[in-house]
Length: 226
Image 1 (cartoon, rainbow, N blue to C red):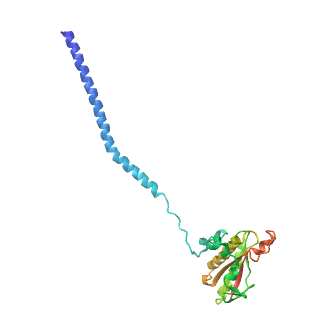
Image 2 (tube, rainbow, N blue to C red):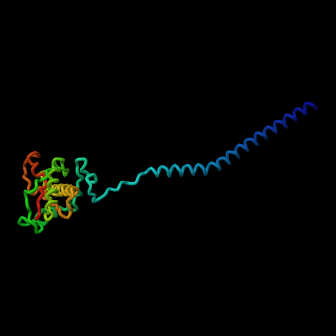
Image 3 (cartoon, rainbow, N blue to C red):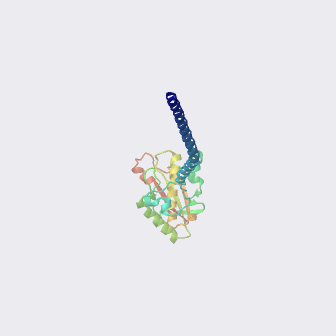
């Protein structure tokens, strides 16, 4: 009887051990399930916070000002001028031919005003450039002083180019040169309404010259209007 009792006791003990082990596993699963339920909202909130933080670092695009009158806004302080926009009619060659005769020049007059050439020195440019060199700005300062001292007179800024390149390209480049000189005069205190611009392109340029020899054609004429 004692042997049988020992065997039964061992079986009971073994069965109790299995039940305890199963209970521990079940409890562990329950605990892990509850922890996941509790942590899931926190994980979602953390992910949303990180996403919002990343978006907040994106900077708004810089808005470029138009019509600014300071030298820093126009780019003069660095020694270079920002080119004016290429005119819409650049893509239409028919609208670019003989522009000078179509824009009010007749018998030495521009829109009914006398054209006085030679009072002010022309401004010269580098090859294929509309940037105003520091040495040429002195001429524009003299032009601004002249206009301020002669309030009844205006100024026609006439952009010109050498013979290199197509007629269409040179007319657009002449526009940019005239516009750069006009914009610089405005920063010097000249009223915009007193300034006119015109591109002659390479219409009067001497062909066949070297780039050095044709430098005289890369200019903006400053023509006084009376």
